[in-house]
Amino acid sequence: MTLEINSIKKKFDEHVAVDGISLKVGKGEMFGLLGANGAGKTTTFRMILGLLDPTEGSVTWGGERITYKRTHLVGYLPEERGLFPKLTVKEQLLYLMRLKGMKKPEIIKEMRTWLERFQVPEYENKKVEELSKGNQQKIQFMAAVLHKPELLILDEPFSGLDPVNSDMLKKAVLDLQQSGTTIVFSSHQMSNVEALCEDLIMLKRGRPVLQGSLKEIKRSYGMKSISIRADYKLDFLQSIPGVLSLEETKDGAIVKVENEKVGEEVFRMISEKGFVRKFEIEEPSLHDIFIDKVGGDADE
Ligand SMILES: Nc1ncnc2c1ncn2[C@@H]1O[C@H](COP(=O)(O)OP(=O)(O)OP(=O)(O)O)[C@@H](O)[C@H]1O
Image (cartoon, rainbow, N blue to C red; front, side):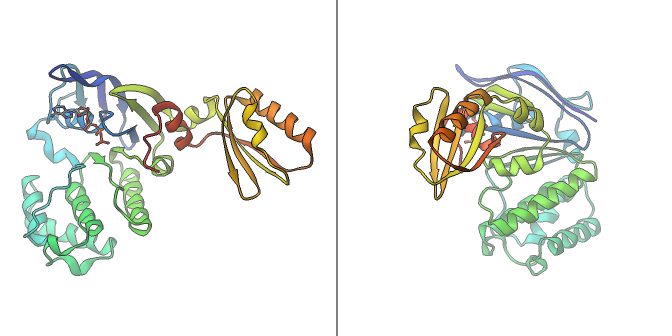
């Protein structure tokens, strides 16, 4: 089945939260939704899930709208995490997964598999309020995937996780994708998006500012990043037209330039000045592109 979003728009009174998003995500694909705070990511997710109606446009999964009758097909990790603090992990998951139509023995079996996988089998009978934030997040993730949804929506799944837990979750997400789950996720952490998704959309104040495959976006983006090592100060490069930024490192600098031509000019200038130990032009990171397109609101 395919997730299809056609020119959706969402207005809250006069405020336009989402405007003109169209995309398609096929079975087993992983799609990234990026944007600064307030860009419209959560509103888009709510429209996908049928929790909000678009003011204009349509969202379908396999040609049909997602309604409460189809919630067993969908898993959702909401940004505002919501577990019952006084229930144990087992009670919690039994309650939530029964709502998705699962039977008790199956829920217990899946729960134990996931608790083992997340290296916390001893949490089965612990109350949620006794767990750390990061471990609560693992339980919340389990509540989104235990019923094996076809479509998985993850709103900021990695926020608040330490590097070990973040890697563990990343691996779980990749395995789900490999087993055919269609995944749409949002993240402020560009490194996670680079590691996980093939296709993405970048939003700014509700509108798409960039869309396509990660590889193509990076390849065709004019901006380049140059890594230089030299034994003399490089700050004079800042005056070259087309140099966007210069960040000094311990033995050189990282210079962002508008395009490769400007990079050649930078090379000419430093080779006139003296010996160049290293000069490497690279494609920009997604982080660089995000800052360039959306402004300085990125989280890292
Ligand atoms: N129920 C609502 N009523 C009025 N305005 C809303 C409502 N929900 C969202 N908005 C507004 O819509 C815009 C988009 O919000 P949204 O929560 O979708 O952003 P986001 O990209 O998920 O942001 P964040 O990264 O901070 O979670 C914001 O300006 C927000 O204030």
